Image 1 (cartoon, rainbow, N blue to C red):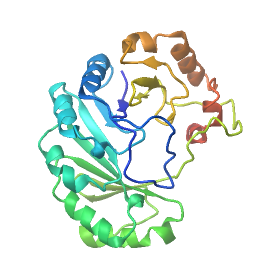
Image 2: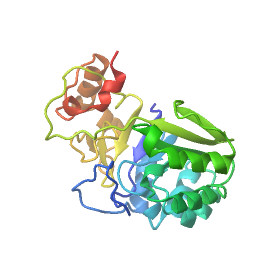
Image 3: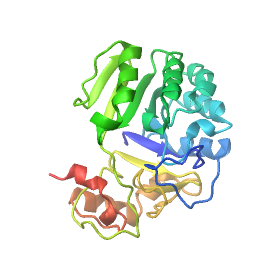
Length: 269
């Protein structure tokens, strides 16, 4: 049982943020038929799906149908978004109970006016849906001052930027996170020692159905199989999947991409 499974319903985005890796993969939107197949094949493996790897999920023209189908199949949905299209999708979120949480990157907004507008939109989201605003804590005292002041004024709260998780109001939070570098197969090897929660707490499914061990494998370098062609049970029971998981449990990084990943430093002990 996974804590959650990432599903990339599109790898198309309306922005080009500096902190996002991007990809040379073919740009596409997942069909509702493929989404239904995926939900059918992940049943029993998780209760939570995260609409995220790359791309902006709120751009999907069939988002309402996707969320309704997730609700019908008893999945809870977490959405990660740059927030630019949230105002156009308030009804899509409010009309179903499947959306559990919306994660919004505040770094994707260029000016104060845009963030003020976003906060007013968030106020329209049903109160039982969690909202997580995300800010990099790198140079937070300088770069984030203006954003923090906006949040303080809007929610009438004093924010200590040294705290990692801050409650702004019921079900609305500000989370400071460390900026990370996306792994790149072209980089130098960082280490062959380390662990990862990939294949243990989560897996990711790319827009074409490719299953990868980790949500940071945005190019599908470590292909475990394709869920549109095979049952998830068979993919997870493959020699490749089992060996990767076994190596993680023994603090060994088997795959070349994992050996070049900086994120695994967070799990060093």
